[in-house]
Image (cartoon, rainbow, N blue to C red; front, top):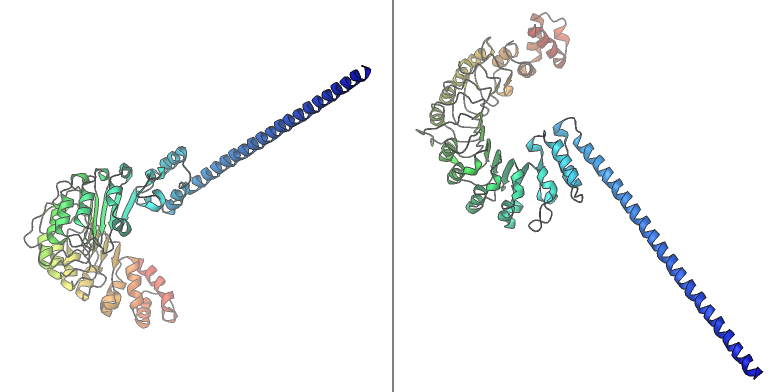
Length: 447
């Protein structure tokens, strides 16, 4: 019996020891688990805190970069593409709003954007929030070739645009594509519209002239197209367009096509560019024989075909507000230059470009005379094509600007220039080099 009780006690002690060992291992296990959980939680919290600090630091650095990009002394120093690149992986509404406010005074033409910067997933997805910073956009050949022009034009984000242009680079713009543009109500706020090398004809110009969505357009440009005379008449007479500037460079306007045409010149028109067209004398006479040119300030008719009769039509056209006239590389000669110089309409003319025009001493005498074109500040000449007598006469004309006189003096022979300098009382003029002599002569002629 004693032996049985001893065995029972021994078993009980063994069971008790085993139980304590189990409790110890369970306690140790849960303690390790708890410590591990605490360690992992602490590590995650620390990592999250570091990420938050890094994010805050990154946000601070990005804001600092944005402020630096926006803090430019001159608007033309603005690196707008870098601002858009900054927002490509930074979706912060407050930053976009900050940029919007500080970009407000910047000219629209400097706020130019591309799909790659503002809609990288096009035609899928949505444009980035930074798209609203854009004011100027150009549809290029790649977008036209993609066949997704309608997708782009249907998006309301385009309402922020003020300048819109198409550059087809001689590929041409199809009529249905032009129709998509003229019927896009999201473009109703644009003020500048341009079409470059789109092969647009007079019918396309008529479509644009009849578009009611372009009533805000102030500047319209057709560069290297085929608008011709009828298209120009349609644009000038449009009831929807209130143009300040019209550019029709290289559009086959003229060739007698303006003969007998009637124009309703917009009273808002201030600048007209007709460079590189087929304007002949009869076209100039018909165009500027109409009334309504009194408000025009800038006119470019360089590289056209009219001669002295066309220049006479200009001189008699009543362009009393004209400040800049470009007649370069036209076949006008002495009488045409005289008519321009003696016109009573050009009292406000400040810039006259006669580069590439040839004229004789009679015209240079009129140009150099006191009281001719009283507001003239800049006269451009191709001195290599003028006679020596003309050059010398204009080199010493006090009525002409310094740049013109300098250009003429540089074409004079050193001996002749030294002789004229000696007559002005400049000592040792004959011993000076030409480039040293010219400033002294100009100083003396200015008095």
